[in-house]
Image (cartoon, rainbow, N blue to C red; front, top):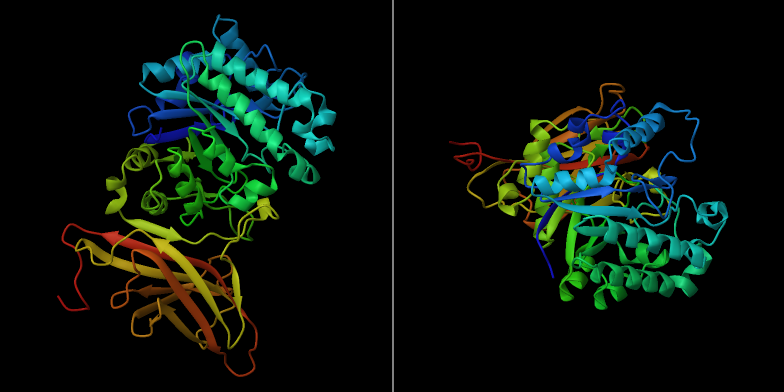
Length: 484
């Protein structure tokens, strides 16, 4: 049955066990819950595993740190000692968070990575040339972990994380095994659903992190439509783990339609970054609240059942808690200021991603077609400003550009130029266009950029690196044209 949720995820490591000095105090042990309590978040998801262990004293697998001693890294030492300091007090590190979640009125979901299985024969791992889930021992091991989480802990839901690969875990099948053994993964999911559905003290929802496109799922052995049609899932979360860049145009309409036909929830992932270090002169930057609001609005427009996010700038402060409050209700972002931007191709998941629009090269005489979606209505009387920004490298002011939005020329709009970066101001320009006469449509839009000509002696290409739309609202709205 579909259900509205706002979910926040903590991976147990980066902003928790890796950070605090042992022995961990109870006030620190509660931080992942307390930092989100009182916002619109109603469900806390906790990553109970990494490839080399579990973040609780499992009877079925190894606990993180069991096979890393003597420790070589501070974060590993802290994690082990923090968990051991709780255990020495008669406390289970996982149950501590479950109890705190319930005390604060939150659901607790355990999130388990499927491509890793600490304590198993390493030769079975796909990363080491093994056949992953083709080995019966691997499937049985992971099912034993699932049963342990479901029966021994008071969790309110279980999430199976297939989207951690690549980047966070190996895959579960070798590529050549996918055609023959995809049904084996479906059988595994069916057994996991039986465990969750027959829990001794009441069934719990089962969900999965999967990939955004059907083709990415199919080529890795995930028969998503079969899972949905057979009702093996209660919810799905589409993402590519290793690509942390927010995508307001994630192509998940197919998934929303297929899931809703079978009364299954889709929770859209708000990835935490707007930039990463893959480009020269750039470093990791968290998405702003305006960028998150833009993506949230687009996802609500797709009719998702809730939003899911993680890895916000830490420690969580007022801006982060405000964001976690606003994204819980589509009405909160309907007339919020928004900052849309188009996704770039990700180096981190090259070969396992869906097509990105940017960057795109344009040679003299040619053009680029750039589709995008926004959730704002240009006729809204409270809308005060809509700005289109294009970041273009190898551009000079003498170039002749023709830019149209949904077939309408932007030539008569007000343009402003500035250099694209402080570090290399010669590299290109931001074109900032104040859209007053030509506004984007609510829903699908098409931007077209044509390089009509270059000054004599200059034949090089330009590259559109960034496309952004900034939408701003005010109490009294805007004015038509330039006259008051």
